[in-house]
Length: 320
Ligand code: AMP
Ligand code: MG
Image 1: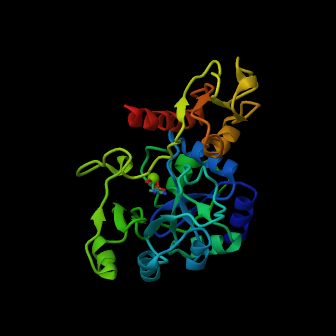
Image 2: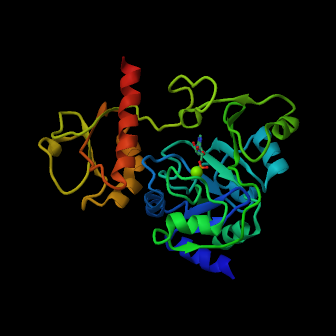
Image 3: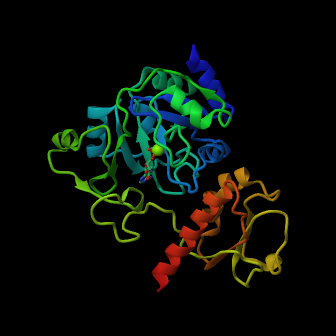
């Protein structure tokens, strides 16, 4: 029986590829930040995009997100199935900040596949699971596709045969009114029948293949601190907070308004796991700027730098 072994591997922070009805997913326990960091690394993703949390049923979803009447109606109509809902996080949501890329919202889905369901039930925790392919490759619809991309990079591949749908889930955000973020396995018309009205389409930078791109900032698809973010800091100015990386001590650090270190030993998995939590902790009233020490561009450093640049740019755009 594969599900108990898969759940045990996930529980100790391992990476497990498993079938869903859409495509094969690469799963990690969504509550373990370092497991999520290793997941991004295994995929070779150059950026931390928020991941979809997979849960066994609606009750498990309600433990991590807040539903309103419309999201509840959609969940009842289409779960389990290829519909992902983006919702406000619930109070005390245990999902790691890295899995949601620091956002206050969370994308959730209940997959309709017996193997996925068995694993989620056995683990009893949300599982973050993007498609089980290397970044830039097509999504895998068989275990053999997964193996050819990820063999040696992950702990377990659960073979459930070819998947049925073959395209990703439809993503609908239910924040201030339902909006279509990504077309996918569930047709728009089916969703509109349940809602009783047309579904507005929002094009984010990640899904900007058609139509008009959104004005930056209209959809909070990136975590943006209120404090200014100063990258590649070689010293700390008076009043600045310091986001450190590695063992070096910068000039001025002793007088910093606050200091947090992404990884004192310079480990990029640990740094990724701490990234959003530390940024958020330093982004508090009284701190106007966060100086960030350089993070090497290798391995997960590329994704860490991508998010730091976005955090810095968001603020600059606002100031000009
Ligand atoms: P994938 O796992 O590769 O199918 O991609 C997941 C998609 O869900 C990404 O395109 C994300 O942009 C989207 N997503 C996940 N969480 C959120 C969120 N909180 N808000 C908006 N989009 C999200
Ligand atoms: Mg994908």
